[in-house]
Image (cartoon, rainbow, N blue to C red):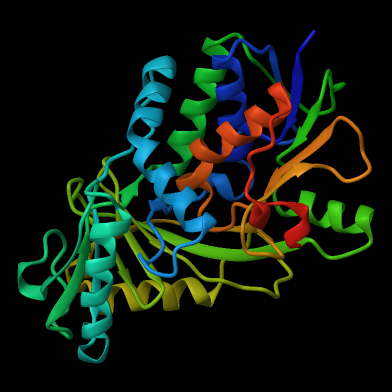
Length: 343
């Protein structure tokens, strides 16, 4: 018999399963399709912080998650024997002259808020590390807190680590045992909204592309909402769109072409890179824009762990720890901004 059941084998469900198994719990994970079937099976894998200002519980928790990420993912790789593709190589962001003063102010705040763990610097674009930029801007922000993961390898590694610790991962329809945690992505948010008769979240479609271009030690680039993320396997991921209205959750279209064109405008050196894959999926977005966590209202013994949206991989280690505290020990230290009161 399992001590708890987790519905969904994405990054939230599997991270929680691993943390609970590490605490000695017998874990059952039930997935109706396959590992990383939702947005956790994407391409991009950018683990990046919020800007260092207007500090709040969400930003503080994300900072702590990024600080613990290297140890967490190293352990995942060791247990599973599969490399999740983690590396803290930083991020480069072009900044226009009009935003230079704000960028410098944020550099000062980062020294205070990031506690010396990482830096936020404003440097000349010509001296920025990694992929050469188009030359349209003279300055860039270079932070050393951002990291990258290979999403698909990361969820496979998580699944392997859970199995190493004798956790069950079952596919299809199986009975739940013990308390049940629902980590079922945007479909789960829709079901929850229907059950509670109020909107608590929805899905936002994202499309991305993968190129063959080897620059495994280059930092990621963030330019005007566009992520360009080099991976260790000789690829570069580019993403992503944000589509509130869509009819085909997994279909790609002309928006992928526009995404690629924007990336080439930022990094012309990618112009000769071969296109490997186009991908689309739907990310779960809670109404509060923060992750949605806690006891399922009026459903005893059931919990919700959802709404990772664009920061699921970045925050999973820290959020999984809070959920494990709640489900296994009855200690609720989840920030109010992440609870049902916020949606």
